[in-house]
Image: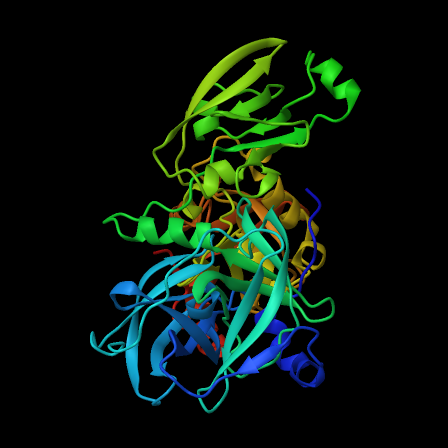
Length: 498
């Protein structure tokens, strides 16, 4: 599927606020008098972690947004609003009354979070929003925002597409509504509910002010999240663990011994995943999932949306633990594989796709800073990290399943070097992959921390994939200079392994 590039709404608000405020809406915008609408202001303060200086945090931030009030005193917001938060506060729109809030559940992959007021009666008197899951192309949705006075501002937009797209964390694909809408800047526009007939249809995911196109987290994803949140153990959204390619190319169909004109070609099956355990292999052609036939583009006919990618059956419709029959053709012969879906936790990746609300692991040795590769680290290079970050590391992150099929490991990198007496001559080294320390293979920072305790003839020998191939540090000099290193660079601790 062709991926479209959109500027994250929360990032562009400040830069484009003036331009947005001046735009004349193409679709009517209305403001009503202040009343007890099913919205609450959400004020967030927090600090993110600095991956370039992993022993410290970044500058504090503050965010102001809206939350959709749901039954049972819960408030729905996006996960990126409350990630790395220190304090979350709810504020009633009509009165300005405030109370602290707790995060009851957060799902970074689906970009959803559920809040609860610390004061249980705080939302009393406000009628909660019901959820509607029947939105289709051609429907009109209203973006609900609040004026500073508490008045409701409703801007209508047209649903133009319902499709599968990656969310900000970029783990799998999720159902998404695309809406053509002239959004207007408001101070609390970081999170915006989308409403159909006074029922919640979705939450804003991202917005492109130039094209006036909005992507929304739709009600089916929200409903899935809320149902999982009711259980004692939140299981997240399931996955199968394979990649596929359309079979429109006749040569590919002939190569795969596929006689018909349906199904997708399996290009990769990750070890240890549900698809792998069910016996799926590269070269299989998936022709149906459950009772739904799959065409050569990977679409099935949904009773509500029409043609849409079959991965929707595995995320919005299925839950972890469900057994889904996959009908495949292998070497021209039909067979059925029963795949037991499960959620893949971020810690189960070699290079975790996200690492949020927790401090990064690191180890400082004589001015050498060692870290574990993660996408969170690569994203320190900004929105264009896939081009701006060190390409060796981007490559390892992208092809981790092929490069590291054994799993249960991390990629340890020498991320940078702090000038010190023990690192003279190594000042310019950065982004090197660590293979061994003192002759011991390194598959995690824990391995490195243990290996440095056993110097070889008084030296700590570090072997890397890239030049200079080997780095040698005088173990006694490293130990003697450690206090000065901490003082010079303000390092509270030379390691964080927990």
